[in-house]
Image 1 (tube, each protein chain N blue to C red):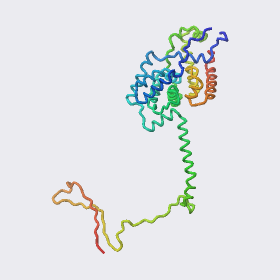
Image 2 (image 1 turned 120 degrees about the horizontal axis):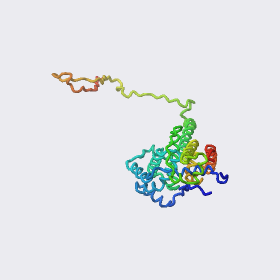
Image 3 (image 1 turned 45 degrees about the horizontal axis):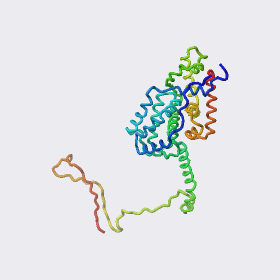
Image 4 (image 1 turned 180 degrees about the vertical axis):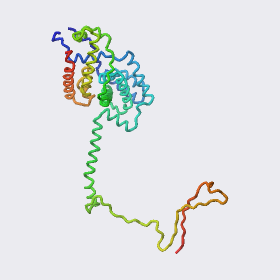
Length: 147
Length: 204
């Protein structure tokens, strides 16, 4: 073969242009795609919207990842300093929670005696089978006994 | 010696970008007829890119459809900073590369037939005839070896070869589509051609 006419690798690669899909393929393809679109295919929620955006521009995914990591790191870095400056952790233990006093909210007024119960009281009607009682009633009871 | 009668790449960028933009604006208002027109304009290039990447007609058919559907759904995010042509290419390219990464090591070729005229082209036959007297077999064999060689390249190297040497896109367009700079495109192309030269040495 004439060395001048030797095929280059580019020429051989260009043979790929000769490979053609079955006849009529491109006539039908748009119809198939539009049909699938009209069937609602590919409709996405917010997560799929972002995923689509990321697959079009993967750099967006990296940027978002970096931003989130940066925000997290900054949060961890600055949180103790902000807590100290606010004086919450004066004792040095950043996570110490100030003890709090519980209030006896439900306690009766001092000096008064109360009896209480929340046990359900069944009130069957006479003459009826217990099995026929449609439902029991729970009656919270508080009895004021005075001083 | 005459040049090979291989068709020139059909890769001239969107001939009417204003028309494309008008169609995109209509499609953004859910006018499927406008999107149908956009598909007709770019289906051959999108299909061919995916087909040359996968060497499989069925996969290319599925991925081309999915790329256009995804393009329609993502059309709201299209601001017109780039042409619709490069935008939809980018969707197809990323979709194909993701698919190929998942399919890794499960390459099953389903090749399209070569243009009938190719089998009678004297220059093309000269390319293969020194290997075997059965020219038709030799051409089919070359087609298969060429596709097998392409499949040995990494996805990114193969994509650059497909977009440049088969589709005829410029380095700048490829850089925009693949989100990388022109230097990267050039070096990938150089490396990929060297690899292909080694795989196809018997024909060179």
